[in-house]
Amino acid sequence: MEQHRLGTSGPTVSALALGCMGMSDFYGPTDRSESIATIRAALDAGINLLDTGDFYGMGHNEMLIREALASVGSRNVQISVKFGALRGPDRSWLGYDSRPVAIRNFLSYSLQRLGVEAIDIYRPARLDPSVPIEDTIGAMAELKQAGYIKHIGLSEVGSETIRRAHKVHPIAELQIEYSLISRGIESDILKTCRELGIGITAYGVLSRGLISGHWSKDRNTQTDFRHNAPRFQGDNLDRNLALVETLRGIAGEIGATPAQVAIAWVAAQGEDIVPLVGARRRDRLAEALGALQVKLSAAHLKALGDAFPPGIAAGARYQEAQLAHMDSERRLTR
Image 1 (cartoon, rainbow, N blue to C red):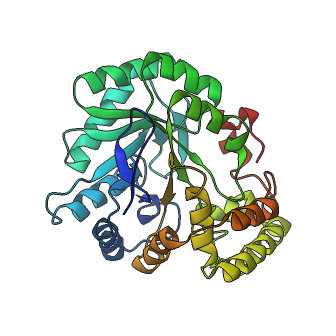
Image 2 (cartoon, rainbow, N blue to C red):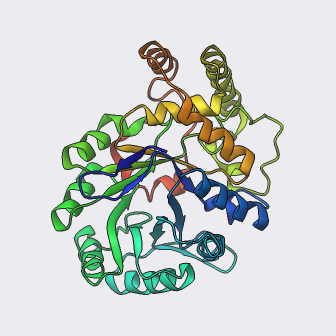
């Protein structure tokens, strides 16, 4: 598998990364055995970057990754972790905490759960409005100096925050949503990252399955957070599924699946962008890996760009209460 360096100061990682969130939380029932098998299959295929958050299943996801890695031998596996989200015993959201003392606490627990001596990429999940980003990054820089963090990242923040953080310590990468129907970063954030030499790990490349080609209107989402996601509701869903049919038509001409073309499109936006696929099963992983063989011509890219201009999706990517915590949304179109 091809390897790409994340920005000018980040690690060298596989051209595709595996997001493990859905193996523990948010998307309904999970299958521990299949999740572990999927992680191991990803490693066998050459994926070397696994992404998690310490609040995914309240630590469950980190422990799952540790279990999956326990018997795979010595490999160049890199793990990225988001921290700072506060949750209650009923899995409710209680806000974010990026105070220096809290960061040290979160990191200590992640190191223990993952069974590692250092986190490869460590980033606050969201901007904590009560803590200056300089304080957050300063504390992380101290932990990096002490050897507990290898690279510092950010997640879902805007250009102003990125610049302020980068002045304190070089930022290796930004994790942010980017897909055919979520192109908001192109207006400003992507340019800022490229100017500063910051790589992108793009999550939501299939818009949480919406543009995978596998979603149907009658699919039951009662047990996962998509049940309340604007793009999966009412007329919004009808309009978005119509977009998927457009994608299906283009994919058919290319000789690939809609999911493969959607992933390949993100990858084609630059070698500084690494698509983060959230496959929970080996068959979905195999399909995602097939995207690496899809070669999009200039004509294909133009057709996709014309069919999916910025702002084409019906509905916001999160509920308003969640968007309020996203610094990246301040200057973005959908």
